[in-house]
Image 1 (cartoon, protein in one colour):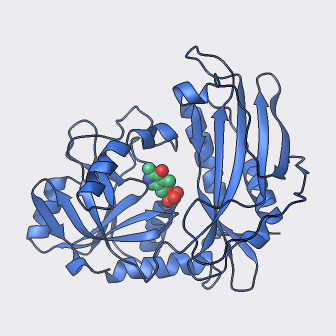
Image 2 (tube, protein in one colour; image 1 turned 60 degrees about the horizontal axis):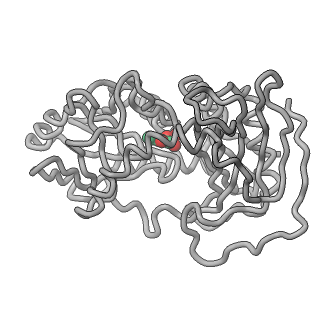
Length: 354
Ligand SMILES: *Cc1c(COP(=O)(O)O)cnc(C)c1O
């Protein structure tokens, strides 16, 4: 149990009105906790949202020793504040931390910190359909030192950002660029970790895809560039000849919590589900044979993002006539229904913030 000190702002901000975008508006408070070698994590506190003062030599600026998480808080149909599987974010934090030599945080402390700061800024949770309070926990290396080494000090922070509906008018299928030149991660690298470096590595391909009118990049494996890995910030699923297929977790793919939830749901519905290697060639063939029935991305931001078009070199595969498929829609309705308290929570995924 953390002993969290709370300092409330004396100067609350205006809540945003009108359309909420993503990640530009922040609430009145933030959580912060220090780590010092020999002392461990200490001084957990909630303070008014504020800028940081760091040495320009802080190690995070030079060698990228940092990690982040992403989850959301919702107002349930009875007005309660709800989280979705926050313990999974806590577990993943520690998997990421291990890879990046960042000290572990007990999962219960992680969840306690998330709940505490969300509770303080609970009235910032937007309630329009599709909106939520985006929660961004992150850790940075703060020791002022230019040597390449593990930092002696860290900061763990949680900031909150009210965010708008991902889709303004229903689930709109996106066009995706299968990247055949740049790669995001390789086995043995840090693809499974939620860390900024993976995103830095992704920007050049994203710019290229955007310039060509595609909204996101689908990465291939970093060695053979033959097998499907994942989309920028989403895992990818296909429905091929009636089966739900997604790349298996191989160390270079981020183990999404939405991915895990979708797999559990589909299995629970008795669908045939496969986690395995999927080559681009298999997709092209399935498309030719009329068996590539649906494709969708999964991630906290959009929950389900239907894919209407996949480009690979000179081939453009249009999937489901560019419209959302019935399984994608059913998964979206079920996951969001559970998140908002509209549907029974048979897996125990919902957590009430009291
Ligand atoms: C966060 C993330 C995902 C999705 O994970 P969720 O836990 O479902 O939000 C997928 N891929 C990458 C690269 C990510 O960073």
